[in-house]
Length: 341
Length: 245
Image (cartoon, rainbow over all chains, first blue to last red):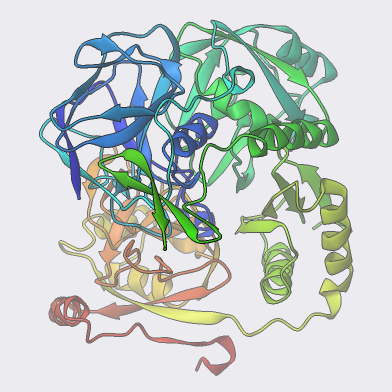
């Protein structure tokens, strides 16, 4: 079912889900949303599964025309989303009508916004995922970023949500210009001196212009190696912090290659990847060291908070001789009761 | 190779089991062994395994299995690896047209090593190459075992486009480009085989732990194979290691 047309593409707008896991042993990068947390919440707001495909919008948003009514949500970085020129609330379920125009007035905070539409963006599933991997021209909409004139389809929505549902304040992140990012040292921290690890953990680093979906190059205190800077290639995880011979860190993100031959001093914890993905060139990043066990408890706390909030309601309620249905017509929810006499 | 593997955290959702700090068939055997055991007897919580030259990257769901429990489970597998009889590795034949438009750099490789073109082909096709790992681009194989007699440095100026299937040499390495890509390898031939097909469930023809053997073909055989592959009539020739002959 066709849902929208791209009027203006924006800087970089791609179809993303939570990534193409399971194919790294074939050399296929994971890709997926840079900020998976914001995509998950956007999906929940419109009644989708967490992993449904949405749009990732970068710094300068696109202009999109809806060709039918729909239920949408915008989360992540604040790029000032508007419908027909009027500001709309982020982190909230919003109804749009046929002919409505979704546009973005400018970057206020963060770097990437996520647009979810009830039913999810419908593109072919490639190796188990709808995520776009740009360098490999794989997945998403024809393996590329969206362009003017592209028409997107959505799948059928099987759940009901209420217009105006809102993510609780405690679950909405605040983006600034200073990011504190927690890391677990390793796997190659033994290639660095105690002093260089201390320098890495003490100094603020600036996100350079070379910051994209593959990774962020950072500028700041040099991190000297004990001796060699290169290793026999091994795997690169999400959040791996590579330090090549020049001594400056590179954080590997969604579109990272699967293997590499640079030493990795530390790895950003999974719970802090979404926040880091909202840092933009010029922002400052500070790393602090925690243990794997601490990272686990941070993850558990976050998942428990997420589990406690889910706006999706069951569809059929039956009680006595009265059957109650929720139906959705053009994205709006109606309550229907059927009494048998 | 280490006496005992090192278990190194790579964040909170993956760890690295490092068997050595060298490129060797012995290290690769350990990695392949652990992978085979884990694929046959999955440990709950492990989400993905990625073999590399010297280690196995293990991705896991920490809310299902903790780092410490995972290390224990992997450690007990490691203890038994010595007793494990691995299935015979698979050999995949790579029909390859050498020279001419298929391998424009073969004469340079021959001159550089003071060999004839025929000798370069004979040396390149006499070896079975172990696939240590895939990476760099989808389906790109890192092969080990190339003869020192045909070692050739990379091009000074990389090409902007190299057709998929190209077989090249870079230093002491040989490899096959699975997709059209830029690159600086000396091109000696090309195979019509499809090494990477994203529409397939297993998107690659060659997997880590298998071996490849290059088989020389001429231009007309290349074109015949190419049309058979396109129409789906051709199946790659593979056999178990012990049946070679």
